[in-house]
Length: 368
Image 1: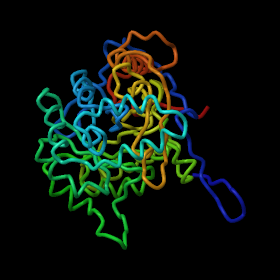
Image 2 (image 1 turned 90 degrees about the vertical axis):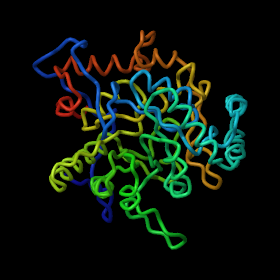
Image 3 (image 1 turned 60 degrees about the vertical axis):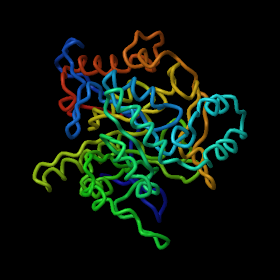
C-alpha cells in the first residue's frame, strides 16, 4: 500500500473509516425476506449478527435477556454497577441527572465500590435462568481474579475486552495474563479484543480465541483519540483483521476465527459496511443506549469514563428513539439509521443480491 509523507521523518498509510466508503450494488437484487442474517460462533447460533457492548448504559441482566430472546447476544459488564451494587437502579437514575464535568467525578466515586463475586454469580444465573446464551465481559486486568467465579456461574461465552488487548503484554510490575495458556485451560469459547492491525489480530488468533474484537479509540462515548491520540479508522481495521483471519486459516489448517467489529457502529449503514469489510458480526453500544428500556435512560458511557486516574470517555446524552425491539426490527419513525437496524441490514444485502453474511463479505466497496 502506498505510503504518504507526513514530514521528512515520518510516513503513514491512508486508512478509511466507515464514513469514507460505500457499498456498490451488484447485477442482482433479491427480496429482503430471502435474506438470512444468522451467524454461528463455536456451538452457538444466533439469528442476529449483533452483540451488545458490555456497558452499563446498554446492558443490564434484563436487557441481555431481551436481546437474547430476539436472537442477538447481550454481553454483561462484570465490572459494572450490576456486580458492585445489589440494587443499582437508583445510581443509574442519578447518573442521568448529573451535569457537566460533575458527571465524570461522580462516576469515579460510584465505580470505586468493590466488585462482589457473589453478584457476578447472581447476575449471570439470572440470565441463564431465562434460557438465553450467557455472556460476560472482564478487562484483561481483572480476568485472572474473577474468571473462576464467572465460569462456575455457568457462562457460555467469555469476553476479554479492553481499549487494546495484545497477546504479548509486557509488565515489570506483575505477571501478565498469558492469553494462550488461559484460553487453552477454559472450557468455554473466548472472544478477545480490541485490536486494529493485521499483526496484532494474527497473534490473538494464535491464542485460540473463538473471536476477535476489532477496534479501539472509537465509539460515541470514547475520548481515547483526544486523551491518548490513539485511534484507527474502522473500515481499514476490519479489512486488515479479516486478512489475518484468512491467513490464519491457511496457517492453522482451516481454523476459522470470527471477526467482530467493535467501535464506530452508530447507524444501520455502519453494520452493513462492517460486514462488507469482512466482519462476521458487530458489537454495538450507542444504538442500544438509545432504547427507551436501556439502563442509561438516554445517556451513554463506558468503562473508560470512570477510570480513577485517566478517564478516556465521557457520559454523553444521546436521547431515546424507541424500544429495543423497535431499534432492532422497527417500524422505524426516523430516516437516520437508528431504528430497524436488522431490517436495514437485510435490505442492504437484498439490494446488492446477497442472501448470506459470508457472501456479503465479498461485496465491492468504493472510497467516496
